[in-house]
Amino acid sequence: YIFVFIGNQPATAFLPKEILADNGEIIVNKNGETSISGLFAAGDCVNGAIKQVVTATGMGATAALKIKKDLDS
Image 1 (spheres, rainbow, N blue to C red):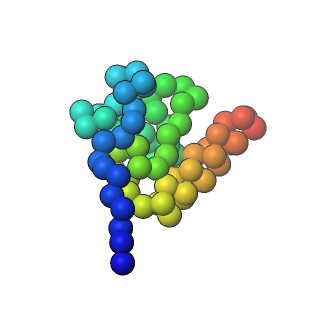
Image 2: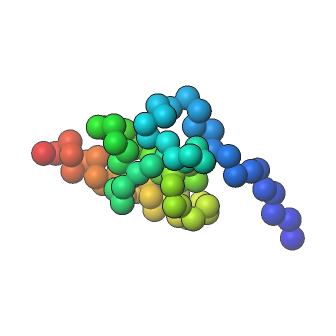
């Protein structure tokens, strides 16, 4: 069995510092919202996430549902 490890550092340097934790991860709430209105994040780049593709997929779905709810209101 082989597991390819690509690192721990998220590629988030292009984002505003106000939404980043000290380790470079994006700070989000349970819906994937950042402190910037309309900006969402999901997956391995966010704080507290379990670094697995299945977790990232679920987080993306949660954020998408919140975005839809916001757009509908």
